[in-house]
Image 1 (cartoon, rainbow, N blue to C red):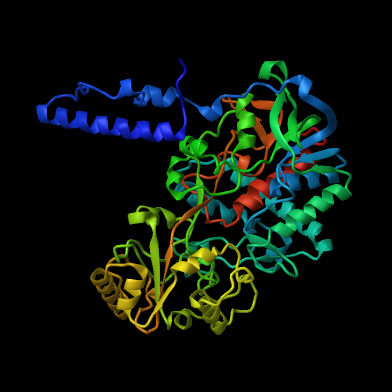
Image 2: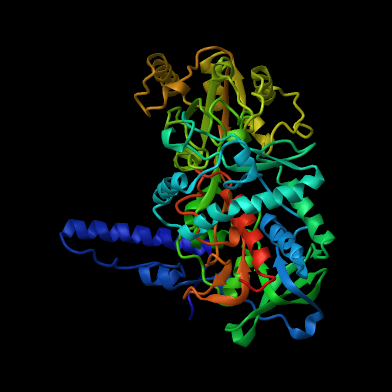
Length: 587
């Protein structure tokens, strides 16, 4: 009987196996010999007991393909040259690029319209970076990329990174040209430089200012306005003669010769009816990540399980490919894209040293104690935060913090610094019970429920009580922290003295925060021509992948050293290139 597994059985079995291992180890240690098997087990109770062979060879429920759609239920066949599944950035860029080449493009999407989140698009050597004097030569970028590869344990596809460096400038120039007629223009986001003006003289949290962000009237937040881009791209596809069908769910990829030949199209369901789409030149998966499927997360990225369901996609497109012979990416576990603090907690993302940082004040856990250097890129801080009791942290600051942190820089290169009083007032909104969060759009991504945990107090004792922190431990920690602020030397976590700002001036402020998953990057085994490949790294004819579907772009965790490389690289650059190459049969 085949051993199938889902997340609940996996976690329960792993716990049971771990307990058995500990017990056996204790017996072996006491006897001075190899551990022996326990005299009895709970296997007879139906509980899954794991060992290495079972763990390696088990098949997960999501890996079992459903029965093919009954041919008698398929009511219509629609033909095209290029079929794209997914209406996010990668799918729409691919479609707009292919339409421009004269291809007959048809796009289907489960969503009700074009979708996007965020808005940071990394690109190298564009006309905008050239105008700003922010280009990178090969000689400059080579040691930078080597540092990034090493930081990711070389668990990534280096060829894909070099493809981004070589081609992202052309792709971004093309996208900027597409957006200008819609009144959408591009800026470069300000990102953390960690005390340096360039990569090699900054600190360990340095990032490259290559993140392009599109803004327009009514959508002027750099790094948070990508939705206007996908809506314009959808219009471009229609204007170019392409077709888009929303509310249409792909349920089966069609592959010839009993799943050994060419992928010819898919079967999709709309309004309860099945339609077959046939593509003569290729099928492109642009279906996003798998962070909403807990079983897929348990298999491919178990380190993300404690961070809860994130993202917006359930891996449906990835499963379609696995069912017809596609292989998973080479490196696992996949790299999660995590976040904590930043501008989703306080409306002050653009602080003195730039974006992508956590809260550069005092952080404590629910025992009232510090647990990390607070000055950290917010994509990396979730790990030390999640392993704290209850996985939460508390942000603590005083009434002088905003003014002592000034100047508050703009969200974009060359922009006017943000007014310090305006920052102070926007943060104060968190503590105003009269604030109507249903009508306030101060900054993107804010979860208004966080305001429910915001505490303002006249004394530190009252602050501790309001946040539910142990009073004595918290007061002692604040006293130690304030002493470091006086000496400029952090004896606990060695934070840079620039950010050692004391917690002394009432009123005092605190807010609770938990880290979360934005998405989980990577998926299928893909090459640099965007072919989806099998386990031998051989392309599956007719099947391509772009965007987060692309495997092995990132290693240990999504890399914020190049902010926006997912949207700018895997989505925009790869989509643009595929749209150019596929119509001519070059890829």
